Image 1: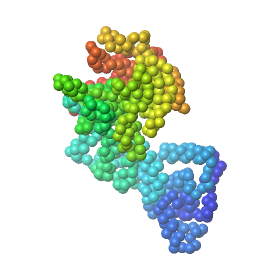
Image 2 (image 1 turned 120 degrees about the vertical axis):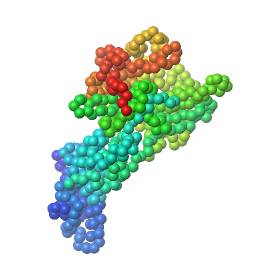
Image 3 (image 1 turned 90 degrees about the vertical axis):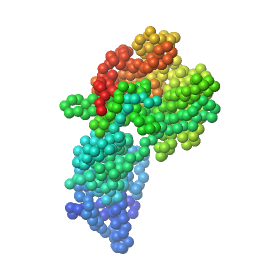
Length: 184
Length: 378
């Protein structure tokens, strides 16, 4: 596989941050990756202001809305993204990384259950993890594309709460009504 | 655990934005009432766009751009294999839906009040065809001829600009344009003539492919034009084929040339006594990667080409139940005493060279909606 380390050490401090999930698991994450979670970034920057010795020491950031399994996936995805403060790769390395990322993305989506996808999207939204949100939203859109309404309802586990007379009202949106009479 | 119905509004909105077709958006809105209120319906685009005409056309009353959309729809019924149809639909400026023949784009009549509930079908949007409706009033000096006439022209359409509201058009010049092309950009709102082709040739096929327009004329000259009017002669087919079609298949641009069996066979096309497909054979070429040469193609593989009057499209045979690949479905005008009396559709098997009317190929004929759908249903 690739022999370059996943996170080339940034020239500044290689601070790690600890994130605590809703089920009390601790995740040690490189700053570069954690900063992609803007909520975390905000928290960290707020903490930094108040505690002079914060840099270099581990800060534990609580994420009460995120379960460990979900965070693990989001961190893993975050690591695969191009790092903003990494040394610029040459074209070849960039292409290899891109291909790797695509393979990883495909593998990730293949075994995803609808419930997990919802958790990932909600967590990415809560963490304000833009790239993750875009990716999982698109994955969801791609999946429900061209599928029937029943399939989508089953997929999301949502019940049809329309009364028949209500459905009738909206019918003209999704029905093609061809009039046989040529009025031209 | 996972309760999607509680998905926050703005997230739902973000997901909805990523859906590619309008049909998918409508489907999402039909899921449940709270989702319906969270997802806004974007206005339809280019349903019927008036276009300014050229300055010197005293006879043209109005010019309108219309969109016809081709869909592959599948009905899912318990216990029986899914059935599929190719449907071409046109929505006019009043919001009325019209069913069109997928190849000739002429109105399909006889289906009074047929209602298709899209929620019961899987709907795949295949492609869009654009046409210009030109309402002209000829014979202004003769009152008895003063009824407006609507003519339909083929046009290639391309979205330009980030917002998708701006577009460019290219259409072959009608008589008097010297065989060139007319180009229109919605941002400039003016028609420009392109191409200094000699009057002996005229553009007969136009299409949009990978950000550029392509046009082929009767002599086989191919040019490409981008939205900035940077045009270049791409290559020359060097042929005098009776008819040429431009179509995209599998990410490549193809040109299909239709040859008549012998010179002067064009008379056959206008003759009532001739039955059957007038075309002797078809030759298919694809544009090479560099975009500067047509390379002959021996087989279409699994692709089926549908060559229509105004535009053409391709579908994989594996998407069409029962149909073979490497085939062309083409429509030929039928004349009756110099008047157009409709169209006949033929299927051509490229491998064997055999061809026959659509009725001889039941898998194809029931594909073109309404096919064997039977009598109208309400």
